[in-house]
Amino acid sequence: MIGIPPGTEPVLKLQNVESAYGPIKAIRGVSLQVPHSRIVTVLGSNGAGKTTILKTISGIIDPRRGSILFRGENITAKDPAHIVGRGLSHVPEGREVFPLLSVHDNLMMGAYTRRDRDAIARDLEAVYGYFPILRERAEQDAGLLSGGQQQMLAISRALMAAPQLILLDEPSLGLSPKLTREIFEIVVRINRERGTTMLLVEQNANMALNAADYGYVLENGRIVMEDRCEVLREKEDIREFYLGIRETGARGERRWKRKKTWR
Ligand SMILES: Nc1ncnc2c1ncn2[C@@H]1O[C@H](COP(=O)(O)OP(=O)(O)O)[C@@H](O)[C@H]1O
Ligand SMILES: [Mg+2]
Image (cartoon, rainbow, N blue to C red; front, side, top):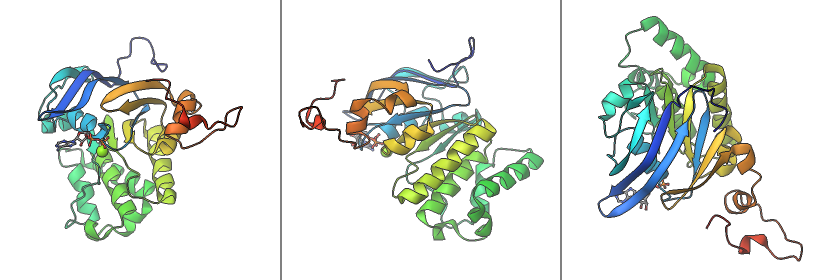
């Protein structure tokens, strides 16, 4: 796929993964790969199964079928603590910072399994460099931060674990377009400067397609399309259904009335 050097295994590989809540199948046979040092996105509207994919990867939900390989190890249905210990950090939907702990203590919670004190101190400086507002608010309770600042804190807490892979669940949720842009810019910088591999799930196709290298489109729990983001951005279906760009056809017929070509 996307220019993986020959012989290099992807950091993460899902094969035919199926997860359900009781009788409700939320994802049905999802296969995807995340190569080293890349940002891969899964686009999908509300209820498509994005959060379920991430919860299944990080061990919060056990899949009914399929397998998940992380850095060559089969982590399917392993304990979440084990998976974190292998180098995977999950930034959950809705941030979930510890509201009664200070910003600084939230960040240190991200590093609680580490013993390399000098490297922890360097990483703390690095996240304060990416998000200076967190340094200003370091001693405040995290619950007093704005939604955007809490998102910055959740991403930073994940970085403090020095992960090999970060799962990002809808960082744009509930944020203004301006804040969303700011956060995405920094996410891309972190990827470029630190080489941190990321799997980003988003409803905001515009932001996600600009930030990521490769994308999958998820509908009703199934992957219906995948390609490099620069290709997806130009596809009519994506432009119409995910980017909201309504192009007018030759006879003035509105193209969005037509069916998606992948169905
Ligand atoms: N705890 C749950 N119990 C039952 N159904 C759920 C639960 N969480 C999600 N679902 C259902 O699974 C499907 C996928 O949900 P989800 O993964 O949260 O989608 P997304 O993150 O793309 O919005 C939806 O139909 C949703 O209603
Ligand atoms: Mg979700």
